[in-house]
Amino acid sequence: METFMIFRSLAIIIIVAKIMGIAARACKAPQVVGEILAGLIIGPSLLGWVEPNDFLVQIAEIGVVLLMFEAGLTTDLRQLMKTGPTAFLIACAGVFIPLIGGTLLHMLFYGFSPFGSPDFYKSLFIGVILTATSVSITVETLKELGYLKSKIGTTILAAAIIDDVIGIIVLTFVIGFRSENADVSKVIINTVLFFVFSVVIGFLFYRLFNRADMRFPHTRRIPIAGLALCFAFAYIAERFFGIADITGAYVAGIILCSLHDSDYIARKMDVNSYMFFGPIFFASIGLKTDLSDFSAAILWFSLAFVLVGLLTKIIGCSLVSRAAGFCKEDSIKVGVGMMTRGEVALIVSQKGLAVGLLSPVYFTSVILLILVSSISTPLLLKYLFHRHPIREA
Image (tube, rainbow, N blue to C red; front, side, top):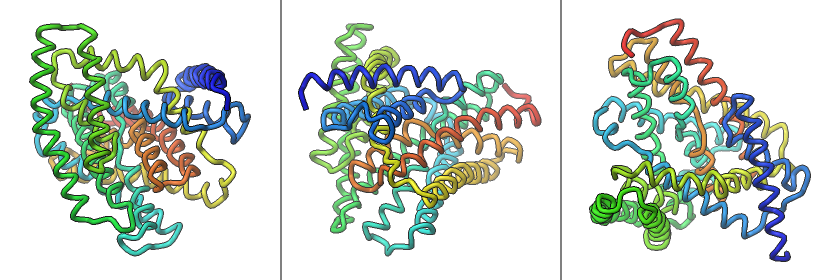
């Protein structure tokens, strides 16, 4: 492939992704859904304007690392500390019940595999995809209704943050165990060592960045240094600990999330993601989605995947909320608020494809889940709050 041809591919991806993103938002769907559909339309499955290649794969990998770094940067550690055990328990239920449900679903469709076998981890990975929660749409809905700062709103927000942290840890272990000859003790030790390393080195870097931030507030050198830290942690995680690079990037964001200028750093990162790396990453999912293998069996699996994905979040989070003291109606609101999926589910799916735990055809199921949950969550929340309003706001 001639080098200059890559510019043609990039131009097509960025323009079509942006047009489809705007169209998706006009239809009250997440912008990322439009960008994924753009990749599907211009890719080999339909028009064939753009062929996936190694360069686009590498650019998409940078995009996913930046997205996870930004997710870490926007994590509110103070909120996590305030909410106590309730949000933690809800988050645990929001991770492990979908994890079990997704695993069993895949086994019911494709057969039960012995524990520790490669097929077992492929089934387990379907469950891992369902652990992710994206509350951006929930937050906007609660803000519109005036309940964002209510007990329900803060609980959902904190539980979603903890949910993502636990989900990334689960992903780390599953990817570590993916090899048929994986040493369980080595995977556990490496994971623990990485997080110990992150705490110790992270504290030192936080102090260094905090001092620089106080001395040079709102200067571009801070985001540039933060970007270097992101890439360094992504490299160290994968190279020395066998941990997913996205985990390293997420931890780098967590290290810097308490800085006074953390929002400033996040805005600078968002420019890169919004204009270039983000659209290419999401479009690349559409490019790699293989519709040639799509069949009636995959369609039925996709519908069951969506149903299990929604119900396991609602049931798991609602039951724990009820046990924690919420009334029945408010418990259901918490469960519904936790059921949206978004970027993190796509990032996890992309990582599964890269390590051989997921087939491209299953991206269709993930996209359908994101679309259905993103549309149904605000509608259900508005109905529940209008039917059973709460006094606190």
